[in-house]
Length: 320
Image (cartoon, rainbow, N blue to C red; front, side, top):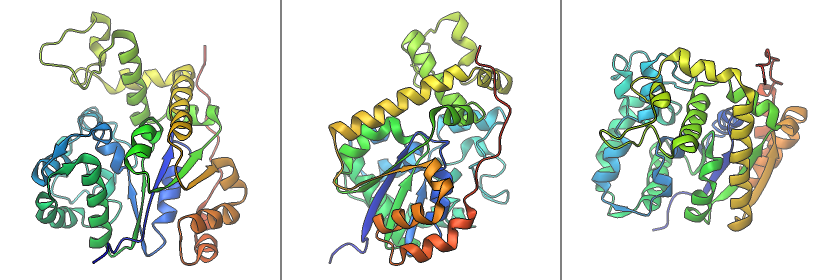
């Protein structure tokens, strides 16, 4: 018997370019699973060719993500987190399973129940590569939620583009872009991207990832305040004042995505720009719906286009 899944697609973007809005609009198509922030929640697995059993795979999905736990600890969780205040982990958010914060909580008002259903099924998956586990998991998630196709979208997935394109060669790919300065300015105000930029800078300055240090591994004294157990909200937010950091991050991520699209060109690619989406949402969303094989692209576009709004202006951080 063939798979009940009729379509698999991935949205690649730098983040802070309207990608969350796009996912929320895609979720309004009743046959489509809009899987948000899944690939970013399981990094660096997207780059792994390791073979895992189903139980080993589930043990990581069910574990907290260190970066998100740090943001919870310092009181700066990203606004995209949707886990309910009445949920099982509500009083211990630093222990929240990585797939609960956004991916499952965006799909249902009772993510704990969906988590339990997955816990009964995923450990029984056969031993296979991580990429094969990812595909099977998204297929299962679509089936359990009554959908026929899935579209995965993670903000900041540009730096995973080489691995996503190689690992999912049959998936349709949407590449969403935005003016670099506007993207950088939005990143500078967002705790997740402040943390991403900090990690990139940490790696550049001392060749170490603060979230992947071995026990007892030394770091330069001037970098110790950026270690996960020492980082404070004030330290992280202060870094948002220098727009140059995020312009550099945007350039780096864009170059990774563009190079990947050149090196591993997808069979089906749709390029979109945030500015075009804001200027003519019905036309752009109709184009997207057609690409994703929605049964009524123009009807879907007309129903959701009113939710597309131009961003409000914000004070600009200093660049010098």
